Length: 332
Image 1 (cartoon, rainbow, N blue to C red):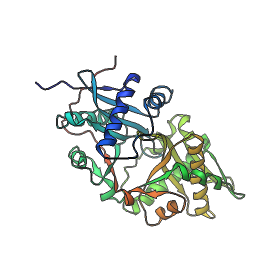
Image 2: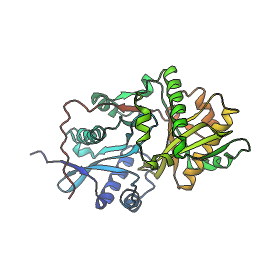
Image 3: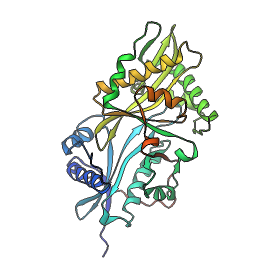
Image 4: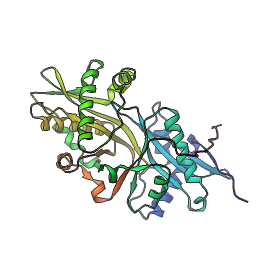
């Protein structure tokens, strides 16, 4: 008789079992530099904060956790928010029993039930799970549009000392910066489309932006010259099941008409690195659509192209998978 598997949101007391599965994943993939966090760190970061760094669904069978899907929220200036799926793992005994499908569908349902823009995640090129994700309707943006994953590790966050200048100012955004940020974001998205990307920008972007809470603004840095905002960076705190708290850089753009735009861009990137260091993040992750020119800037500033060195691919799901029937058991 096939065992019943229930899908529910994770609870504080699940952290030790989730950590056991994270270690099992490391052993399964023969990763010698496995997880650096324990259940206490996982509990503190996910259940000991008013602003949890991650959320998680778990699969339960016979009162035992047999799979998990850990995710966090990401943001965009012109699009609605989104969810980034960091890890999805099912113990070998429960594979080919739709447990992975149901965990993935639970995340997808949450994404689109909350009217978010898309669900995104990263997959290594050798991972056979790519077939699974494509069958669910996900598309490989690395293949289709050329997106590359970049990372700045903790040891390179000392670039934060480079963000000072006498002829421009970098600061956290204020409410009155909103129109300038929107204008610059429109230029960024247009440049991406001109280079072959196809971001699904909302036509009601300005209206959507204005109704976002003021808390959203403190995820921006802006660069100002002669009392005019010339560029911005949008980031959020993220999570790694290997290393814990990290940072996700969603957008970084400086207007081409700015005086010494490349230096301003370096200053913004340094400000983000300073914030990551202050927040004790283990790294900064971000995706680049133009690795030949834009990528060189980030490499010079300590970033590594993980698509090039480790063959990571960016996947995105933009609608709920057809025939999605996952039932989520309420937490009690």
